[in-house]
Image (cartoon, rainbow, N blue to C red; front, side):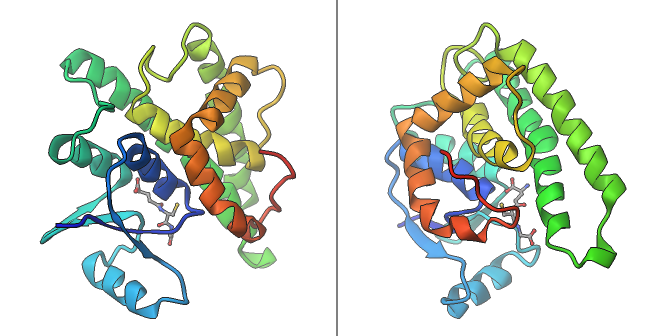
Length: 219
Ligand SMILES: N[C@@H](CCC(=O)N[C@@H](CS)C(=O)NCC(=O)O)C(=O)O
């Protein structure tokens, strides 16, 4: 049975799952969410009325939420790279860092981007200022945390790095990671050099003109 991934190449949460799939060379069928494929959009809306992507379909099973999809893949389609450690204590650290990147990097980053897409009169300057402040605080905490680490939860590439890669990739475009955060910048560079994430980034290059704040000429 072929796994089906409803996703878009430019979406950060889809890149998180793609990184996990590419780490292990897990075969899957792309179900690209785009207006050119109305049938796929219809299928997706029927499968998951909340319409947040990515979405994994495995036979009759529908799996939502990027973190849960990666956990699911590790359980049912394990490969050479174990993204959630078997040791429960180590797994807790990985899951903690995964939450950090989703909640305190991706969430404020998306707030800023989505706000910029609203009509002027419907914008939320206070919410955007809070999101920028949260990113600054998160960069500061991460700077300290990454000082002695190669990867988010230590020496092994994990679920947390799958979350970190697109989160920091787009966060830097949205709210620049300043030079004071040298360990965060170095970590982001390591993520971009990781073949699994580099592949996801390359596949999304044609969509860069869609970035509402204007994609910078780097990366
Ligand atoms: N918590 C979800 C977040 C998924 C999410 O927000 N995906 C974005 C694309 S990166 C989306 O569905 N955006 C569509 C929308 O907000 O309507 C996950 O981890 O999968």
